[in-house]
Image 1 (tube, helix red, strand yellow):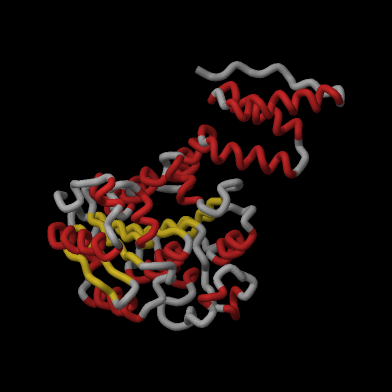
Image 2 (cartoon, rainbow, N blue to C red):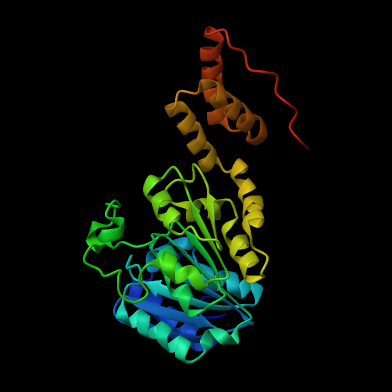
Length: 321
């Protein structure tokens, strides 16, 4: 589309209001752009008979690339699918009567019934929203990264990260996300089991049709990590094509073996747990496969420590071609 054809410095320097005007102009070309109260908006880009509904924060969109386009729009445009992007100005968990009314209207109009397949996606607060509003499209696929099940203090008072949301109601309409996802055909919750509070929320989503995908050592920003693995967009594309499942995710997830940020996280964990032998094996593997200088330097230190203890690493196996 021509509206966002110019990228680079000009896009980065747009104010938020100017950037939103660009989205409004894009909406006029491809479908529509609609403001939903003070903090939310919706961008519909009409194309094929598959619908990708993504929930995204303005800051996250503007940080994605020079083009500053929503992830859902980018994936759907590449695949020839329709996208509906719900945008929040800040982390609101999309708890807004204007958003409820918008989805009520879509249901009344039979909007979701026009599509052969519907996929809902979001991460963190937007992951909560993706699960919650999926109730409006029974039979949808839901992919939620690090979603909160609720911030109702009666049910999740143990989560002390979002105290500014304590006065926001999570018990009225579109409230408890695990209940709202009951009508989905399949749900996938991606989380790091070593991030305790995320793991506790994920456990609340446990249902027969919901697959929990624990990813140790991905930390607090799993979406960024998956994106750096070049796994995020392919994951959503597979879901839109009806070919996403746990096996497909784990195949994509193998790319973590080549992601320095992930490998450093694993090495740091081994160091903090005082596992020098395993850390040395990891550093040697990374140094040989990826020629990582930091891992090579750390390996030398670890080998000296192990040698002083009379421990010698086994002979390295050949690196597969």
